[in-house]
Image 1: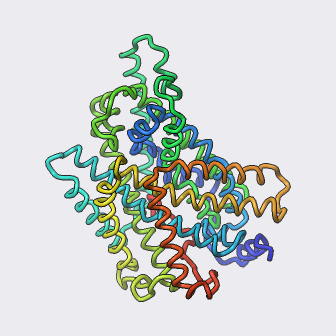
Image 2: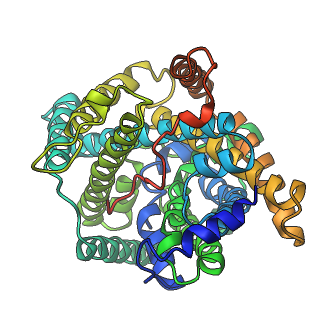
Image 3: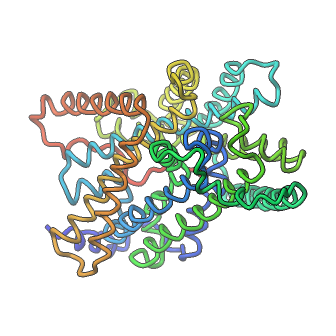
Length: 468
């Protein structure tokens, strides 16, 4: 079967979404969903795990993600109607591998609202320590669930306002860093190179572990592929937008982390690893403590709400296709037109996860363990997409270009390396999650006697982003 011809036929029927997005629109979309302040929540953890090489970790993670971005772009140009790792891997490899890639992405969807809730609650506790962390968690989880259950959506103008606000804060932060470095200059040229290489603390294993966490900075770029049907020229613009988004976010992220390290060197401990960036911003310019803290809290809360609704929609798709019990998961509330059962369930899981992860994280923080688990699920899906892209270009011989064969091979190898360097706890919990997925597949296929094609995970383009 020629899948590419099928995709073209599906698009030529005249039935579908309106094509209205240019390359610029796709890049703006990508920058919003990934977030220009993406490295800030994990900055302290990157510094701690990388022994002060946070800027280097973010840079290496960028170089590691670019081949995967090329593979995503390639598959989106071939299947502009699909828009998910589940679909790409199912088409090019087989439905079993597609199912496992999709199951890995479900972990990504599930952990996103949890880590957002953890960070926002901890930041609120820093602002007002009289109220315990768990109380803030209950407050924000209830608020997010209430908003999501009502079907409240952020408008395009609100998204644009949030993007402009975060960009403005980043610009002010850069200005404050330059002012601070100029006022506190000691004549030590080494301070400008230590964020990338500090011989006194260098440990390649630590840098590898920090790089695996730094991948969290780029989570979401694959969401561009879901807009292929709305792009004027998806075969050209989606691959370009995916790579350009990674490059733009990568450069801005490296500069943010580098600037933060110039202000707060690795030799000084942070008061709190999860909120280290706000303390660093305060040192650069005192008013930035509140400005950065509030901006990041609003942005992450919005992402958490969107992620909760996206996961509720995903569970609805699985319920509607009877992968999960249809009566509960496939129900839609008559007034709000929202799968309210799923929204409440996801809210309860997010609350439980935000309270449980800090308790079971061991030497990690709750946010770090959650971030590692997000990366576990994403890397499983990324490896699948790279494998699918390789099969399409090399095995099926559909592309004569060297880059279409080399990129997925390099992307797959780098994703394996990043996956292997996740924390032991994340690998253990992730492995348990994948075993649960296999058990669900066994149950739904009656001991693998039914075909895997029947396991529609409902992942036709759903993405947990801040503008759902």
